[in-house]
Image 1 (spheres, rainbow, N blue to C red):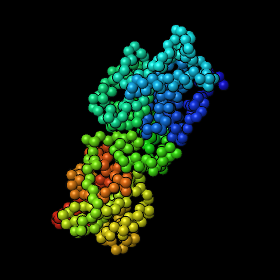
Image 2 (cartoon, rainbow, N blue to C red):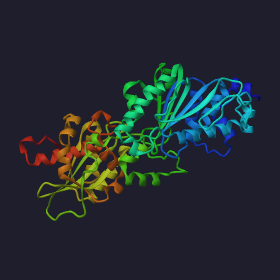
Image 3 (cartoon, rainbow, N blue to C red):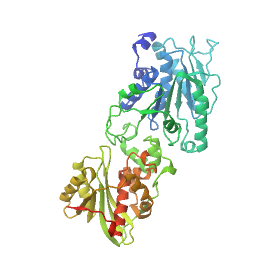
Image 4 (cartoon, rainbow, N blue to C red):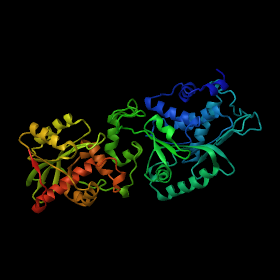
Amino acid sequence: MNGKQNVEQGLSFEEFATQVYPFIEVQRFHRVYYRLLELFARGRIRKLMVSMPPQHGKSVGSSTLLPAYMLGLNPDLKVAIASYSSALANRFNRRVQRIVEGEGYASLFPETRIKSGGKPPQYLRTADEVEIVGQSGSLISVGREGSLTGNRVDCFILDDLYKDAMEANSPIVRANCWEWYTSVVRTRMHNNSQELMVFTRWHEEDLIGVLRKYERCVDLRSWSDIDTLGVDDWLCLNFEALKTGDPSEIDPRMVGEALWPEFQNESLLEAKRRLDSLRFECMYQGRPVAQGGLLYGASFSEYDTLPTDIVRWANYTDTADMGDDYLCSMSYAVDADGVIYITDVVYSREPMDVTEQLVADMLVRSATRQAFVESNNGGRGFARAIQRLAPRVRVEWFHQSGNKEARILSNSATALHSVRFPRGWAQKWPELYAHLTTYRRDFKANRWHDAADVLTGIVEQEESFNKPTKIQRFGFL
């Protein structure tokens, strides 16, 4: 098959990648990524945002293989690669040049050639710019805040515009990046120009975060979403290191499954999360949270041993509201001063027939005397089931009618002041720890409210013991 036939008959991006880089490892998620890059290269997608954990092949696909593929499809294309430094951007440029001058590439796209040695002498080839011989196409690379004066760009690839967390957390760096993007990148583009933005997320107000506020973004959940894109819409895809949502056409993994288990498995990723849950949510899950916007942060007090003056052993449980939610059940002890000590937790998205036994076992194990179960969304049936499984525990169900947002926000200070977790709870209950310590003040910005809701319920329940006139009516089993 000659080069013209490759273009006309559709050499796929994955086929191209494995031919010019026969050593490349292509995992299931890479195939999704490469299919998106191919649709971008062929003009089906005009504006594409992809976030991915570090060291998962993001830049190999977007900033090395893709420019070579696009210049093969269209040697007249003017492509620009930008990164946080000119040195890194130039490194991508040199890698593309090495692909284009290789024998394998020449057999695929013979019409796309670059200067070799000093010939042809009239064409440019440097570390930061190369021209396509006999065509009008070119590849230019630039560092963040670098100049592109006089250069028209048909395709802009923005790959990691922040070097690290220190840069991303700097308001000055973020402001300068935004200024450069609006005054340089956007001014070099025309009606049909394309943008590809590939980041490891560092901060909720990085360039991706700001653009999501100002421009319409469509999160890719099925391939049919591409057909709904408007001309100025961004198509967005976040590859989570550990899957959190239900399986989908785009990401068929089960909850908790690693993105590339052969390279970074679940236990390694969980260890990373235990070290720094905030950083993990940013870099590995693509859900950055600003410290100033956190409701609790890492401010919960910890205890080593329970005091001797325990006056109450209780539990509070909220069953999952929707399929993606968690069942959250916390057993706790209260001392004579009203300090609450969390002693055991079930935090799970397993089906109810599984969690019923898990919670019942915990109630027995933690010596719980009284358990409160929210009766909303099947809670009443759940309460009856655990009462049957743990007959010595007094299980009470009730309907929670209070506004969840108002309850969580208004009780947050009390929760921080009165609740204690066992030392090492980040390792013992990593998902619970991550969801509480990264919970945002902006209620709508949170994906899961389950842990915060139960913590609030415990605080309210303990306050009710000191305010008899405000005790809710319970159903006793």
